[in-house]
Amino acid sequence: MAALIAHVQPDANWRKSTYSNTNGGACVEVALSAESSAIRDSKLGQASPVLAFAPAAFSTFLYELKAGRLDR
Image (tube, rainbow, N blue to C red; front, side, top):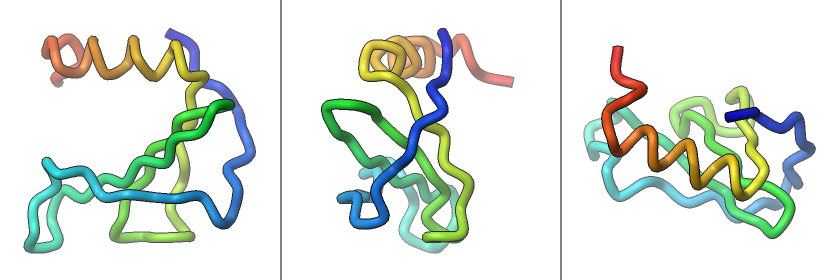
């Protein structure tokens, strides 16, 4: 699984994960486009580092995450 170094548009449509908790804890935002899928920490907003993937790599990332293969 390879991450993609991609430019995410400043006006990207970021949406908060429904799995993020509501008290300011584990908050993740995702922005999807045809060229890339990106993840960032919503607590940091625009200042957050962004992890961007090609669409196929993002699908693999989600599959591995849901399967528990990325747990520490």
